Length: 119
Figure 1 (cartoon, helix red, strand yellow):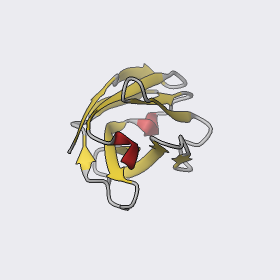
Figure 2 (spheres, one colour):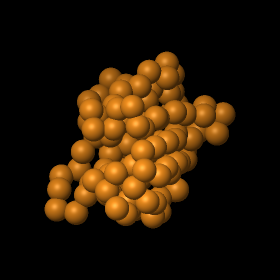
Figure 3 (spheres, one colour):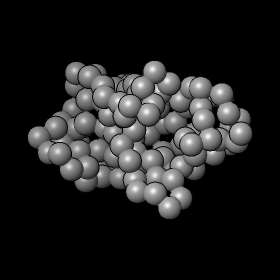
């Protein structure tokens, strides 16, 4: 079982930055891949970025590559999403998620945090 709690959302102007945090708790977190997803009003949830607890390898959606950076602090069991050069189309509820390395599906989700980018 993994529990996830996001924080750090808010309102930012276009071109600005925000950093989201995801505090994770549970056993054997090293067996998991952590991901960030987002869902804008009227749209399906989409993948944003992911990171392996163990190797630190990362992946990004094309829409955020070069602007967003995912990282983790193993000592704090926390994953971060640094968002720079933000655009109004980045407005969404952002969710932290976890999946076992051997699985493709994310089984654990946080409650979500709202991010709004004004133009």
